[in-house]
Length: 334
Image 1: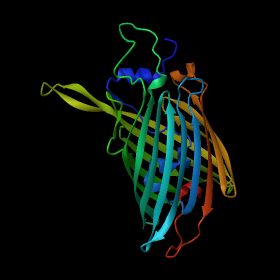
Image 2: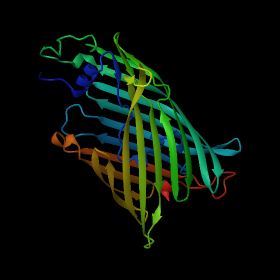
Image 3: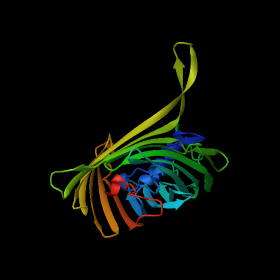
Image 4: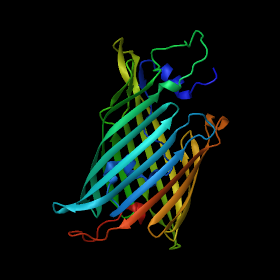
C-alpha cells in the first residue's frame, strides 16, 4: 500500500455505519467559548468576532486542519438583553471534509448578582468524502481491491444540527453545560454508507484570581468533553441476555494563563493523555491575538512534532444600552 489515509482505515473498520468524534479539538477553547456552548453568545456585553486556525499533528499525512469563524453580541429588544451569535466551522481530515454553519440565540437573566443564560444553536451540517482520491494498491485476507463500504467517487451528505446550553457567570467565575448534535444527525454518503454524528456534552468553567500585584492575575479554565461513540452489545449477567450499551469517550482540558496589565498573557495547558500546551498572546486596543503549541505526550509523539493554533479576536465595546444598569461583564474579559 503506497497511499491509504489513516481515516480510510477507520472507515473500513466501521463497515457501512461510521461513528466518530466530530467536534474540533481546540487549545484556545477559552477564547472561543460560544463554539462549545451557545449560551455564551452575548455574555461579554461586547461585539466579538473571532477567526481561528489549527494545524493538528504536524508531520502526519491527512491530519486535521481546522478553521473557525465566530461572532456574537448582546441585543436589546422586548424589554431585556438577549445574546445573538453565529459560527462557521470547517475541518479537513484525510479524505473527509465537514462543515457547520449555525446561528445562536441566548436568553439572559440577571441572577444572584450574576447572569444566567440559556442558549440554542440551529444550523446546517455537511460532510464530504473525496472518494475519487482513494487508492488501495494491494489485496490480502483483510483488504480487497474494491469494497462497497468505500465510495469511489466524491460523495456528500447534509442535515440540520441542534445544540443547547446553560451558563451561570459572576464577576469572578463562570460555569456552563451544553450538548451538541442533539439529534445525532445521520448523513448519507453515497448508496452504502451512513455517517452518524455523535452527541457531545461539555462542562466549561473558569475563574479570575487577582494576585497581590495589581498588574497580575491568573485565569484557570476547564473544559470537559464527553462524546458518544456508538452502541455495542454486551452481556447482561443478571438476565442472561444481551443489551445495548452506549460507549463514550471523555477528554479533559485544563489551562491557566497569567495576565499582565490586562494586555499580555502566557500560560500552560494539559490535555489528559494527549498533550501539554504552551500559550501566549496579547491585546492591543480592540484586537487580541494568541498562539498555542501542543506538545504530544501520547503515542503521537512518534509521528508528529506537535500541533499549532492561532487566533485573532476583534472586540467592540457597545456600552450601556437602554434598560441596562451596571451590566455584568464576562469573566473572560475582566
